[in-house]
Length: 115
Image (cartoon, rainbow, N blue to C red; front, side, top):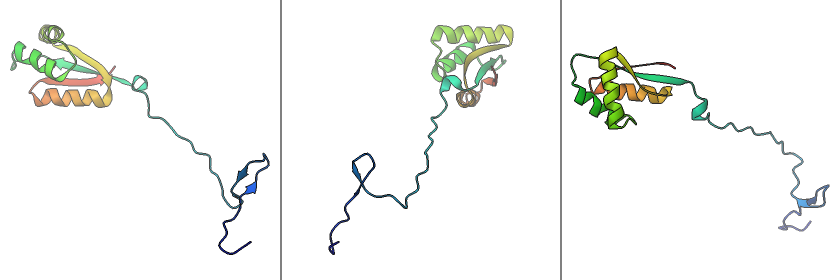
């Protein structure tokens, strides 16, 4: 081989010319995709009645912090007032924790539990 000349690739058994990899070791790669949200365990976010906040304030807060429309937020607020507790939404744990923390920061009483 001439000095400075590039090494020519060795022909493969299939006839194509690929660089020689006699010393290379190949490890099979496994990739895992993140879990689908629908496959995650579900958690309920619950609104509890309190004697401090007005119905209007609670309903407006639910509209601002959850996917509930105004009519559904008002109905959920009334249910919590009359029954003591009402279901706001069911979602995966991280989102349930986030919604609970946001509601608590607005002086509402909310808890989460496994669905």
